[in-house]
Image 1: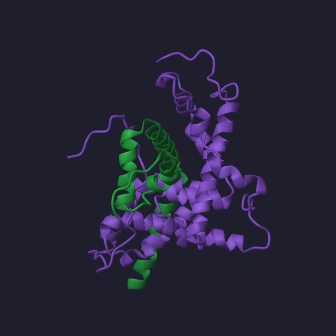
Image 2 (image 1 turned 90 degrees about the vertical axis):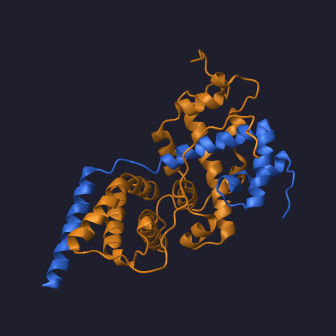
Image 3 (image 1 turned 60 degrees about the horizontal axis):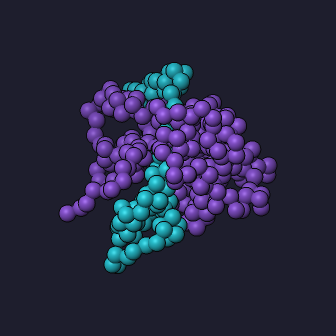
Length: 237
Length: 87
C-alpha cells in the first residue's frame, strides 16, 4: 500500500522520453496517395512543436523553417526505414535534432565561431550554484504572497524564450535537448559528441545561467522588486 | 541495492538527476520517500518542476503559414519526382 503525500504536488507537463524507432519490418503502403495521406496526418499535429523546437535550437525563425523543411523532407524520403508507426513522433524529432546538430557542428568547425558559441568566461564558473529558488523562497509567507507565486504569475513565455536564447550555444543545446526534447544525458552526449560528464556540467551551468537571467529579467520588469523583497500592493486573489 | 534514508543535502544534490529520470529505481524511490516527509525539499522540487514545465513549453510555437505551404510544396515535389521515376 502506498501512502498519499502530505503535500500537494502541482501536476506539470514534462517532455516524454521518446522511442526513436524499433527493429522489424518496414511499413507498407498501398500506393503513393496512401503514403502521403498517412504522413501528412501524423505530421500536421506535430508541426507547431517541430517549429518551436527548431526555433529554440536555432534562435532564428528563418533557420528554424529551413531545418523543419529539411527534416520533413528527410523523413518523407526515409519513411520506408521507419519500423514502428507509433514511434513516428520520436523518429521525426530525432531527424530534426540531427539535422540541426549536423549544421551546427559544420558552423562550429569554421575558423570564426558562430555568435553565442564562445566558451564561457571564468566568471561563469560558479554560476551552477545560482538558484532562483534560493532568491525567491520565503518559508513563512502564505503561498499567495510568496515571491515564487509572483515570479511564476509574472513569467511570460516570451521572457523564458528570451532567457533561453541568451544562453551560449553549448549550454542552450544541453538544456533544450534534455528539458525541452526529453533526451537522456547519454543520448545528448552522443548527439553533441561530448562526454557524459560534459553534458552534466553544461546542464548544471545552463540551469544556473538560465535562472540568473530569469531573475534579472524579473527584477528589470518589476515582477520582483527591491532586491528580492515582494513588490508593494500585493494582495490575495 | 537496499533503501537508504537520504539527508536534505543529498536530495538537493541529486534533484535534477531525479527530475531528469536519470536515477535507477532504488535511488528514485529513496528521493520519493524523502520528498514525502520533508516539506522544504518537496517545495524546492515542486518549484523546479514548475520551472521545467515552463521551459518545456518553450518548445512549442505556431508554425507560420509560410512553412506549412513550403512543406506541402515540398511533398508535392517529392510526389512528382516519384511519379516520374515510376513512369
